[in-house]
Amino acid sequence: MTPSSPAPPVRHRGTALRWLRGIGSWIRSAPGTYVWLAALFVTTVVARFMPPDFEEDFLRQRSTNIHELSHDPVRVLISSAFWTGGGHWLPWAFLYTVFHATAERWLGTLRWLAVAALAHVLATLASESVLAWAIRHGEAAPSAADTLDVGVSYALAGVVAVLTYRVPAPWRKAYAFAVLVFYGVPLITGRTFTDLGHLSAVLIGLACYPLARSRQGTGAPRAQ
Image (tube, rainbow, N blue to C red):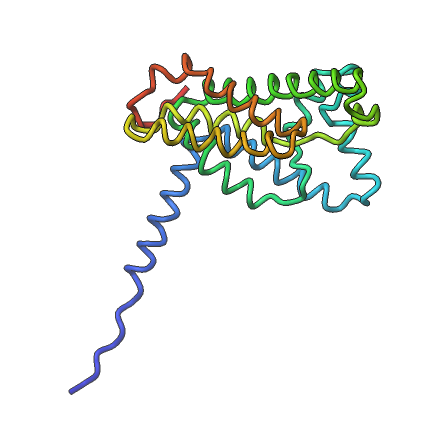
């Protein structure tokens, strides 16, 4: 009996192509998410090559702290959303894919961007206003007005919250409760202005129900 020759790996190539097409289709269905993520990749790489002292000063100038907000609020509110501040990109790539891309596919790019922007801007203003009050009343050091505060976590928290309305009704309350606990417990235990900002962003995301109302019960991507 002549041993049979191994079959060419056509099936494996076909599977790989299907995976690649699926990934490409997912990325194309959430263009805003992945353009933003690509920008974060570039800024993360750039920050890696900065000397530590220069990086801290550079990021502080793009920070949404009280000092910078009082001088050029529009500039820092925009620029702060393009720096992670932690030097790690892959965890954000995962979180953006799970939450931002899902929300953008569901709401459409414009509504998703509105939720993310509202959470980023309003939560920043709320937390920094409370911090300013604390400084004026001696509850926080004056140096806190120049603290380093860049990143995309407020926008993410708002989007995580608005996805409550994407969850099927039997599980919606459990999801909302889990989100409130996840972001609320650090505020109770740590009581920092960033913890307040995260919980504020969650409440803003939940308040974006009018943007999500027409999409409840649907899962198909919506092009805008």
